[in-house]
Length: 240
Image (tube, rainbow, N blue to C red):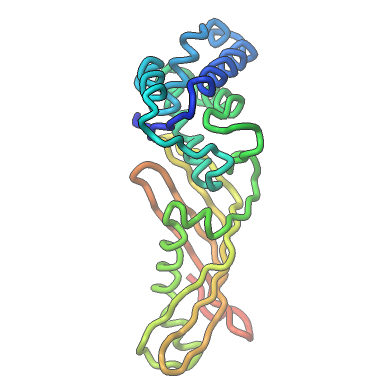
């Protein structure tokens, strides 16, 4: 599989991660406990997007690329997708079970500077900021979907003829579950959202929207399966 290269400031970072992976393998026991430090260096190189430790070393020492941001400086969804890439790369490189790869990646956190960069897998309920969604373009997708499907309902609610248009501002997104897909390096996220649909026709008005969504993210994958309800002052006005 292909993983975007993670560019380092110095090779010492990768050496430290290789030692951490070696220690984690010994803690796991079994066949993993027999992994050598050299094999762990190769594993780290694969997770960072390189064909080999030699390539990682050469590229890093060339100083030809700006360093990639650590997980602490990346958004929540970006960190989560990195985690998916890491365990898929290690799984393929070492031909090990998915659960073993996931455990090792979470123990090592290959692109984190410390232990303070959680991903979606670290907790069942996570509130996402607009920045988190905007990083992967998913907030725009959600707004477009709400705006498109809620047009007729919003226009009817505010008594406006079908002229002009409506816009949706997503104000809150909460993740309720995040699971990894078995058929590739992707993650399925489900949760709820709140938005405000505003009519921009001659008779302006607005209506709150509350809904749920299922989102699949990964290389070349962005599938949204949302549902919503449009809420009028006297209760639910429109549902799908």
